Length: 294
Ligand SMILES: [Fe+2]
Ligand SMILES: [Fe+2]
Image (cartoon, rainbow, N blue to C red; front, side, top):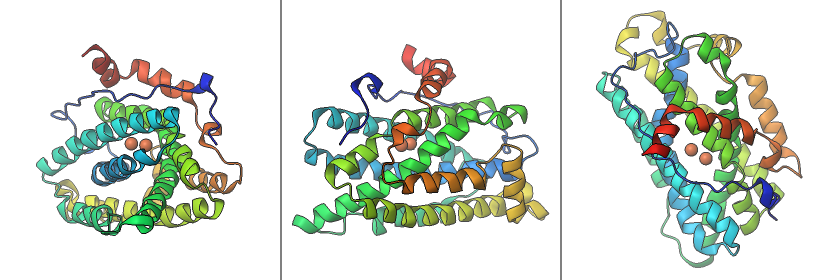
């Protein structure tokens, strides 16, 4: 059942954004290599992850028997494709600066391409595997909406003098995550919607993403030419806790609350996140405004 009223519906559309990384400092939060790389992990994880979202949702689209939901799914696909290509640009820039992400990205490609790929199934088995992956994406989209809202509210980045282009990329993406936060949940509810499957999907995807994220920041700090031979090349839990206290990383309490909220039997994304704040950011985002005028 779709819970979002027609009045709340936003017609989702992809924005043709572009970002120029030519003057991006290596540690784009000044003096904060750990916090910079903690968020840089998104450029390594998301291109493959979001291209996988696009493949799965494109396969699920013919199963949708509700035209409004089908329209949302098409809007979601367009936005996620643009997120993937924008983070790919940032990843390519990282690679050009001597920070070789290839070993880590290969693992990410293996996970989304092989482990979570098509598996050569057909008939009912193929459909079951498709719905299982939609459930996983719905759980991940809960987390991306939480992270999106966090980045919109993250005054700590502004106070720390974070690079405006990178901040805009993250906030444009975060705002669109908030904007389309109901689509994956609505699609999963339309195709299956079983509570235990929904919860199981978060219990699988949450720890896997946490582990991948930790491995990603460790990889970036270890391969950062500027950190070679320094203590900052090795990441520690206390670095994360310090960054979260300074408002440069989503904190453990926020992540624990996000997990608990998903367990509620009447959970719906529309009750979490601030659509008005997302729309307001998109109205002022330099990249989104340039896209509207293009
Ligand atoms: Fe996205
Ligand atoms: Fe998303």
